Image (cartoon, rainbow, N blue to C red; front, top):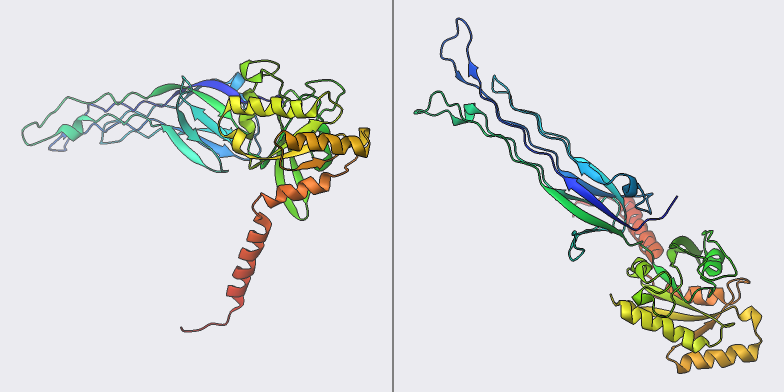
Length: 351
């Protein structure tokens, strides 16, 4: 499946059905009169966040969405049927932006979340609704309100607890394959990862989602390399793991480059909790590892984890550190179930 995180689409809600002009004329029935019914309401444009989707690729091939029009009114005071709403399913984490990308119209963060973006037009009144004591045979009616139309951008920001950062070839794909169920492509060249990857980590009876994004290079904020467009996928992360390649020319400089790109991007990424991991320590001796770790601390790192994504050395320690910054959902759910079981088992009391 191809990955797509941005798409521009056209939306139009359904127009209301026109009201009817009709008069009751039946043989042997006295007192005829206007009996034209009103038109039905047009269909709404509704967005719904569903599970199982992690790309907007479907919107590359289908870009125009138009809801149905309401049915017209009919004689014998019959009101036209309202049109069905057009429900558009999007992945969790999708944002709906205005055409100029300046305003966020909707943000889907939970499965099942829905929003009516465009309402259908109201049905027009039939001539029966205009009947009065002074207007016994009205012939006026309403055509029904027109639907609303809008061009919007869909932007997907993957929902993950932890995000991976680093220069190209820092070992991010190897790391995510080591700790999760992801099957990211690994290669001995830069920009092996071209689109974000998600993996589920299971550690000490806890689960969390980790996201790997393409590597950043100096000038990414200005469009160098793949640019910084994929940084949006880690905006919602609670913790960032910054991988620094020990086999690089200057690990401290590598850390500085990535952090400067985070500041240039903004959106609070530079203020997020960041765990610095000195990767590929299996390729260096202990003295070199300690020396580079001291350089990273001198450059601003609070603590440096020496790890090897290939062998798994030191990985458990950094995963332990990640859990310290994540909410313990498992314990909360277990506590809730225990309280529920206790309440069910409690004897009945009139008090």
